[in-house]
Length: 106
Image (tube, rainbow, N blue to C red; front, top):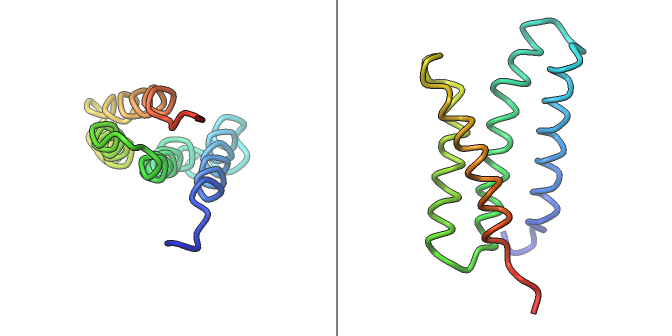
């Protein structure tokens, strides 16, 4: 992973996630594919993005929180319907953590 540009990979994954969300919203494909893209693939990609973002965090607690948010996003779509709020909580937690824990320029 030393030769891999993590921020660029994270950006590409985030853009792919947004494309999945947009495809689901605008009904680009069949209803089944649209639902899968916006309700499953989107959250898995965002979870992967949170894992990659955690690599830049210097505070160990922030890393653990990012992993927890990622796990909630990745596992959430596969939970029963009454527990799928977990994926939304993971999404909001990961977004908040991205703003709080990002490395500051010196």
